[in-house]
Length: 336
Image (cartoon, rainbow, N blue to C red; front, side, top):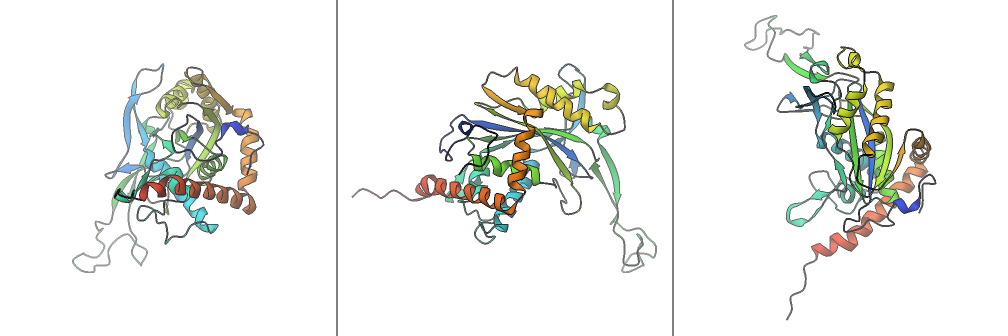
């Protein structure tokens, strides 16, 4: 079944191949925080000391959004949709507990179940870095738990004196709203259905990082997709190129960056970086990307379109499982 009219059919495989076949699609994403998310390990925000830009040689600390902080929320959105449309149940496939191995999530994003089998992810995501420096991208908040009387102090139960502030008060660094993380999400050897499945997951995912039920709101703005016969530039290199493009006054201001300026710089710099690559690539960026994005939104914006995409992706995943995964699990018969 064919879904897209804005893309040539030869950009996709007709079935998920077992061996790498040298087709890549890269989703050019700018992740924009819209609340106070937490991307942390061991109670500290993740950060890295790196060069500020490609031409600006000073070293700065940047917030880091590790790859699992990006891919896990997106695949969970896809799993939720598969359950919603009756293509997967919680009993047969539970994330990080028991993988069914034969659905789009397992085949596209991969799984590992010890001796029972594994499948390498066809989605490649690397650490993303904030454009601005760490110092201007986070705030420290005091967290406290109110009692039932509405106060932040104890009423004197147990060993606590009346009015005494308890140890429930804590401090936590949070990432500010309107912090920008350029991120390239790569899908290897796409079929049309797997392309739309991953594309839809990126567009739909709204929460990243810790405490996703209370904060962590993030919006994904795509500036384009690139089809290629190899991998393209890194997130860090793209971030550094954007940094060089933006005004110094904006980069060192306490105010958030202008979103329009960031998106414009992202488009210009990725096109410049692609010219430095030693690969064959077909780009849909900026105005060339608009018709494709509109078509994808039209397909994924109706129950009928969403069901058709998920059903096709599920059929492809089950065919792949039957052909390659199930056969590997079947032990060879001993010769007599």
